[in-house]
Amino acid sequence: MIRSTDNYNLHTHSFYCGHGHGTIKEYCDEARRLGLDMLGFTEHMPLPDRRFANSRMSNEDIPTYLEDIENERKDDGMVILSGFECDYFSEFKDYFASYLEEGKVDYLINGVHFFKRGNRYVSPFDDVMTKDDVYTYRDVLLAALDTGLFSFQAHPDLIFASYREWDCVSEEVSREIIQFAIDKKIPLEVNGNGMLRPSPDDDYRYPRRMFWYLASEMGAFCVRNSDCHEVVNLAKSRPLQEAFVKECNVKKAYPLVKRGRLSFNF
Image (cartoon, rainbow, N blue to C red):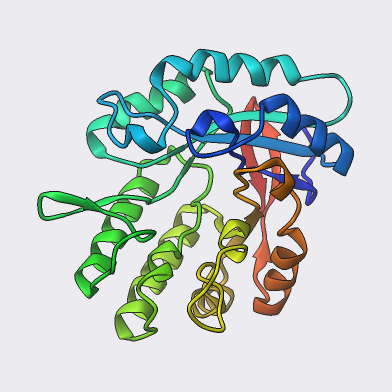
């Protein structure tokens, strides 16, 4: 077992993801310069049917991506982990699971970037969200966490990046997500990438403070990550992340590696 640490980043995107920059080596060099204990790569996992291919790595690049990570592992004290950020769809559950069961990666994380509204996909990044969309987002997220495949939930409050009103729907759905994560012992992520994005009001686009005040009140545990897509952003948002966690008084989960898998101390 590799000891737990608070000096990590577990949500990292390189050029492989299709909309990021920087090589695996460049990220590892920067992480070593920063003195990180643990660095985890989580490219957006391509789906077998190439859904969302314009913003995902190609299926053919997966072996090279994993090989690049393996080549950077050295006996120098910094733990380097391989993983994917997945958009969960139930028809691909076995596909996701195979990467863990066959030891191809150290962990998977869930991120809800797309879900269906009628016959088309919508995204909290690009589309105006309705109350019905908030409930659909909840359903997709909880279905993913219920599989037990995902080590933590990336940006659990992403829906509120575009659904800005904090109303009874926002609070209801937030409480359900938070309680489900508590029951399943799955950490929720304070996401630094959202902190670097322009916001339409005096709160971050995400993470949303009201969500995290509830998370603190209910006793959830958090991880905090940069979700960086450029090497320069690996540590850029870290002071903001730390200040946010302190302000909201959220309990921290501390990552460690147990039996070859990412795990957490609570």
